[in-house]
Amino acid sequence: MNVMEHTFKSVDILKDLIAFPSVTPDDFGCQAYLIRKLESLGFKTENMKFKDINNFWATFGSVGPIFIFAGHTDVVPPGLDVNWQSNPFKAEVRDNKLFGRGASDMKGSIAAMLSATKRFLNLFPIPAFQIGFVITGDEEGEAKNGTLKMVDWLISEEIKPHWCLVGEPTSNLSFGDTIKVGRRGSITANVTIKGIQGHVAYPDQAINPIHEITPLLSEFIKEKWDHGNQHFPPTSLQIVNINAGANAANVIPGEVSLQFNLRFSPELSARKVKSLIIKKLNKHNLNFSILWDHNADPFYSEPGLLASKLRDILSKQINTLPKYCTGGGTSDGRFLKKLGCEVIEFGPTNKSIHKVDEHLDLVELSKLEDVYFNLLCELQKHQE
Image (cartoon, rainbow, N blue to C red; front, side):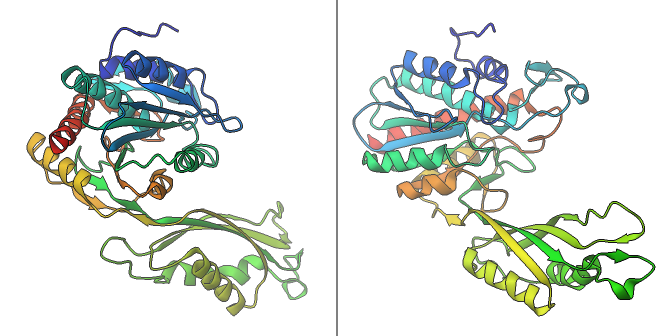
């Protein structure tokens, strides 16, 4: 791999990062590349490998409050290469867009962070605040051996940041239209409903579990779980999988498995969600077993100095006033909030994330670098 160690241009860094096929949990040297870049700027770095997951902490300076850039180098699988117009792990520019897995989610943000930091330190070699990087390789996976454990380590070391920016692709319809200040919780239910297998010609001698759950599914879909609140949209339930597995047209299945996910607001707790679901299952007299995967609680970070500065920058730089939002999927912000600091998420548009031919507009990448750079400058002004 021909990595260009001499340049700090966002586009060159992004091309280099895409060349590492860092599908969770593999890293292939992606983080070592970033560590070399940061150490060349004077950062102190510390590798933190938990089980098979690579992570690292980097810090610059020793005076003033701590600002953290947070991100992940792992990406989702690209799928079949033949479905891509170009190699997903060889960046290619077409129509002023850079194509490659991770371009938007979120190697583009990391490249912009690095370039913005280089520019800032050229202006302020001894800044009035400390800069940290929390980089994980487990955001797209189980998220058990990445930021979660890094946060625990930071707390044990009594490292107390004031501000944290996560580079998730938060922009929705256009660049800069959204700043995330929180996220909903997430819980998945895996339910097995028992019936009695039999011949389709003798339904009176069987119990069809698919028929049994039909009223329940309708109730799930129509249910208003809560009304959300001033910061969060209402809780929503999505059925993602139904499988009976009889594999024969003349057999009534003996059981059906059902999987659904709830993205819940702070108006509900995971415990309350479980209680409501079990109550509905019992209401329909179903013979069921259930396994839960509770991987996130909702969190909210009251917009403070960091959010205000970022909003002002976007208003001046691209003439748009972004909205504060808590929708979308889960993120590592839920772990970083445990540090007690202001946590916001801001990055490029998310139109192509996790898709074939994922890409990032190069004009947008340049704007993102400028936003991060201007944010660092504003923090410097605030401290002077």
